[in-house]
Image (cartoon, rainbow, N blue to C red; front, side, top):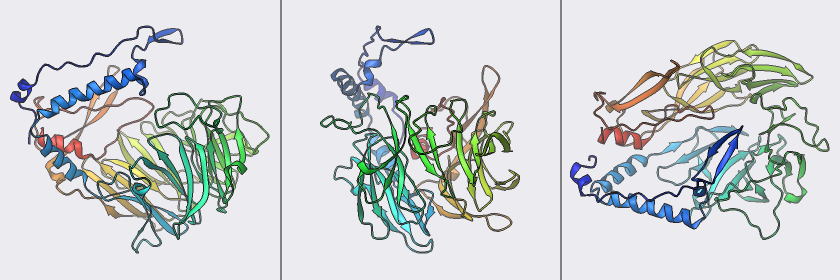
Length: 493
């Protein structure tokens, strides 16, 4: 195995990249600053000019790859390494355990259910069998609190438009419920299992049709509904809309005690008073708020209001002007998530120098109770609810394909045990090493980075490097496992 040799490179004809037309007439005015966008025409995938441009790019790529004699061997090696089983973090509903599992090369992971962790699991829904050509995707699932029903979203041909279906868990039989015109919507069941909240757009006029994943025009007038099981969609109860702000998008979640529904809006908060009597807590864009737990009218939120690295305050809905911080903002680390578990505890996840740190804290006081042991890496999932004394934690790193921990919180000291561990045949983590380094930016801010390489590689600037970075939307790229990166380090280093 190796890289393209000089002889291979010399054998290639001169590469003529397809020219990209510049349209100098296209620009936007942002706060008085004119910004040119000469390649906006490339955003229309259905335009003939765009199709022709893409075809020429593909032809150029194939010309280069055709000269690479080792391509097939490399493809076989990467395919073999990708062919390993994967598991998502399990979660419990109604005494049943649900999780996704992929045997290796399946296009979509299969949803499984276990009635007991010690018993064999059975598949509940296989999205790979939803269509012959594989163009129907399972985009989301939501199980009712009693574990009786599974609501799931189906997307066709990569479209953002989805259809919500419902099936019974025990016998896997489909219910007649089918909800259309759904986009960017969660599904949240009421605790009685009689139905769920969801969002959708008004039905289009007959004959306009849904998009096939390439739609570029904007959707307007999103609405928030409640659907009763066994009824037609046109009978659903309209819970919220805001015709004065047609671009707003609504989503809702039922609280742990089943007494409230939290309505979240992508922009602002207004709406009609003729629907559900929501209590307004926030109506501007000054901060982000995420409900963590509630005891009656006392709510705990994760927010960056008054603290860009996030904190946990509490507020009584009856006295919304009084807020009390139970976990204050950390001086350096970012509080990424907080999950209420085991009655009066919370699992908090901090991002510290682009790696995750887990702690158990008291929900009432915010007091640190325990730190959970983790290697340098990323928490890929935390599954647990207020009534659960057992929490499942997904973990991955540059050299760890995946581990799911089962953490028992009832003992005085939490017990972390490996529940499942993913192994990749042909991968030996001892062949590689990971180093964290820091680089100073222009303003002397220390920027953390990771260097993944074959062990004992001399970092002298003579080795090929795949450099990846991302910046924007407060998203950090944390350690994760990928076969492609390790193949590069092993064979092209």
